[in-house]
Image (cartoon, rainbow, N blue to C red; front, side, top):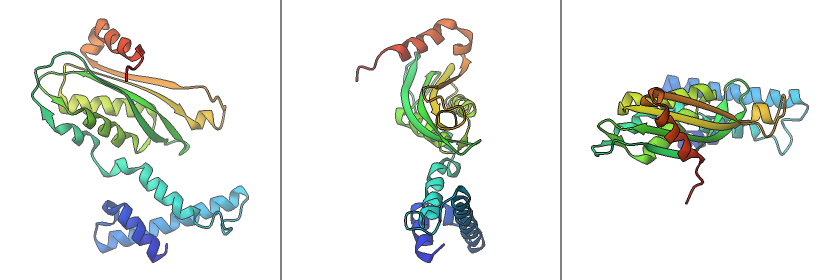
Length: 216
């Protein structure tokens, strides 16, 4: 990796390189090995890694993967720690939270929307904090099932609500763009806790809101 490339990476991802000198050198060596591997992959696939259109691709792939996995460099549930005392004991549902993640099996993207709802006990959090928390867990190597569970567990741990329900709908390029190549296939997963698990009418309320067209 050239000095200029190192500088640009350090500017874009300062949390990676704000460490002691030994660790910085280790990260630089890892980055160099990764880029060499990408060059080898390009050659294995049948192209010339030194031609004009590909010569900077290993560096661009490195930057992209560091961005795809920013969630490892934060504790996503920490976004929920800012809470408010509001007397609201009915459903709070943030729907259609867009996310983009990376399948850990093929390093292919999967993307969709998360719907996150909870019944407050004594405290609520900011609506944007829920979206930031979802993004933090999504920006890791993931499977949809784990992502759904992690979001629900974060709500449960920090807000300690009467109930939590999370539904995720996503398309997986490892299924749509390769392998079986079913481009219209989508996957839905859910995680239910507390009174959402105990009361069918509470789950039904959540799902009925999802089925309504947005008025915005």
